[in-house]
Amino acid sequence: MARDEQYALTRQSSSTLRIQRQLVLLLVVLAAALPYSPTLDDYFVQDDFGVVGLLSSKPAGYFPRWFVSPWMEDIWGDPPDEIRPFPAVTYQVAALGGAASPVANHAINIGFHAVNAVLVFRIAETVAGLSLGPAAFAALAFALLPMQAESVAWVTGRVDSMPACFYLASFLLFHHWRTRPRASIYLWSVVLYFIALFTKQNAVTLPVALVLYDAIVAKRPLRPTWTWLRPYVPFVLLTLGYLALRYALFGEVAREGRLDAERFDLFRDNLSIHLRRMVFGEPGLKLAGWNAAVRVGVAAVIVFAIAAFSKTRERGAMFRPAMYFLIVWIALGVLPTVVAGYGSPRHMYLASVGWALALGAALDVFWHAPFRAVMKPLGAVLACAVVVFYGLQLRGEVRRWGVRSDVSRRVVVDIEREAIAAPPGTLIIIDPPQRSSSFAVPHALRPPFTATDIPSRVSVISHSSIHCCAANFWEPYTRGTMREWLANPARPPVIALRWNQDTGELFRLRENEDSFLRTLIPVLLEAKDVTELDRMILNISSGLVVKSSP
Image (cartoon, rainbow, N blue to C red):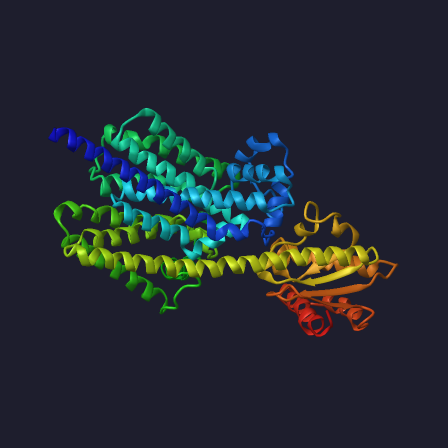
């Protein structure tokens, strides 16, 4: 009878835990999705126009060609050294509902983020060995980190959340294979790594992550034997094959030709910003630069070390996975940014998994510390404070992306209206806000975003940051456009447009309102270099357009 009662209690406990886990998974998905629900109808901004315009126009059978060619072709002036067939195909799928509609693209972004949050929860439970509450906290922290907004709210930001999804899934399956050796589990881990590689090149760090996971977390000693090496061989071969393909296509394996002292200095400065942004939110607590970031990292290591040794021997084993994710995972996530050449919050999307899991491990310390009746509620309060802190900042970030999208939509509508109303050949000088329209022209002025091909009807020029391509492409395009306008015997008019970056309010100046506007074009052509030409175009909008009436 006692055995039956024990069995019944065990089944009841298992059922309760299963229900709790399901509720936690629902909470994690909602935390990842609901804050971004306002972005579903957000319009395209910045690079979105070029990416969506190009990829949505490709035929259904184009997919295999993206494995052997740059996915962006030459729409940015020079073909990028990026082989990304799997992100490319998602834009084709999104375009099935209409390429000009952003809804499907935003839904895909939110979906990837929600799946990633669930994967973080599963890794927290199984790899890091966290209890249900701390594992849920890790997933919630990851889902609500303010720095994730660029990867989720911005359509093009998918290029970092998507590879993270396959990277995390491959890592998690490798761990499951180590605990339950089944060929199918291992095979799927390899397949998902293949997809991650051809989603973004930063996935090349996974083989190292697996080796160090085995050595640090699973405590498998490094041995120069075939038995030890065999599980990593498919991952290494895929990596070598992928890097060889990059060399064959681009002449470089990992942009190594760009590595110099200046690039390392830039990486160091960006890293300081990345770490502050990841830990303290967006735009990051202003600490005293790189040295402060190092101090924060060292302090975190010391705290975890003291916490681990203050626990029982059984729970002290959690110290290894905590250190693995806090140090190794973040380092591997950051390392590829050394060749990026610029700092962006989305570059830390994968690395932020390590920070989230470290936070979960910290809560687990409170969950199992002595004086649990006091420490566990205290830990819960601190965890809730972190979630609220991140959540409030994330709300502000999502709202800012919404403003950018609203302004971007107004810019495209206003330019199209002006172009249709103006005589053919009109020269339109535009100055939209950079944070909504960088790299957007001329892609945003063509179908599917406009009903007509605006550059074929009128001439549109801007300062360099709004143009799609680098300055060495922008300058000849801009000078050539102005010369063509001057040579037109019909003497079409000039219009200058500028928008308020917060409201999208349009400031307009037409030639019939200020005849001086026409005389500025020959002056612009006399600019001696790119910098001066850029400055003079900006002066037109700031000095003339902003003073005009809307």
